[in-house]
Amino acid sequence: MRIPIFAAASFAAFAIMFAVTFAGAAHAGKTLDAIQQRGQLVCGVNPGFPGFAAADSQGRWAGLDVDVCKALAAAVLGDANRVKWVPLNAAQRFAALQAGEVDVLSRNTTWTLTRDASLGLHFTGVTYYDGQGFMAPAKLKLASARQLKGATVCVQSGTTTEKNLADFSKAAALNLKPVVFETQEATNKAYFSGRCQAYTTDASALAAVRNFESGQPADHVILPEIISKEPLGPVVRRGDDEWFAIVKWVVFALIEAEEHGIAQATVDRFKAESADPAVQRLLGTSDDTGRLLGLDKDWAYRAIKAVGHYGEVFERNLGPKSVLQLPRGLNNLWNQGGLVYAPPVR
Image (tube, rainbow, N blue to C red):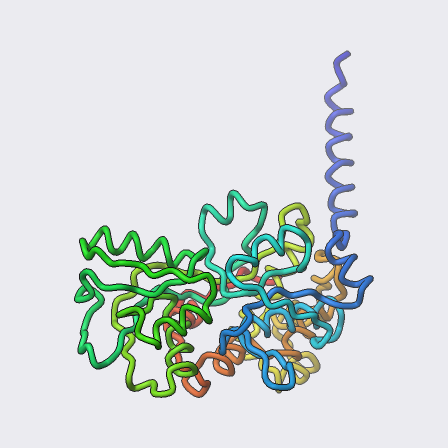
């Protein structure tokens, strides 16, 4: 039976009206439900990577990846301290997330096609743009990684680092000899005991290893070559689009806050006084963006209040005044020469 044109048009108009009316609020999703019921976010982190995730003698965790989870806990639970930290090595991390042992993996993990497409996981964005480098003893007087022909190189298994090393060696005809270890601790120990002539991993990790593990940082040189792209960011399980959206947008909110100059110390003033519509949307004083995520209107305000904006997180954990003393470089905002960019909160 053919439906009259006017009836079909009326039905279409009703459908559009229904969608507009009822699409304003989102269901929280099963992961958020579980987090709120237990009153705690379970966050998978590196067992010990100063600048990204490391615990002090009192068991207090700090680092860029740690701050991401604190911001998430503040946004969804109202308290940045309601986090259970689960240290995971490279071999454990994906299985733990897949099995539901953690709600989010915030553990200096590189976003690649294979990981994104075949592990049942979603990368939620990039919190640090890194690249793989090489470190060697200063006494070898090397100026370039291309002088390592035939050298033994310490590398951790189960990482993109191992594969990148093989690619670099083949492309540059260097015949590098990888010496592979399961954990970062074992890799560090092997390099400093002289089992390898060089050490390769992400440049940020090399800085941490040299500054914290060597005893004499000046005795080791990080060579200038960067041989890979290593976009690092949080990871969640597939199958819960609501939680995927929340993790993405909490990170985006920290980036957006830096763009508007909203710091941890000034967020209350911005919330009370700003007439900027973009700031009002972000901090929940005009549009209630939280309802679209299954959260309340103050979700982003709480995240910023807990850890500060992205620039503050970077400077505190990785920047020139931190123990790692890393430059912003590619991790500057997009309008300051870097790659850090957030879609608009609107």
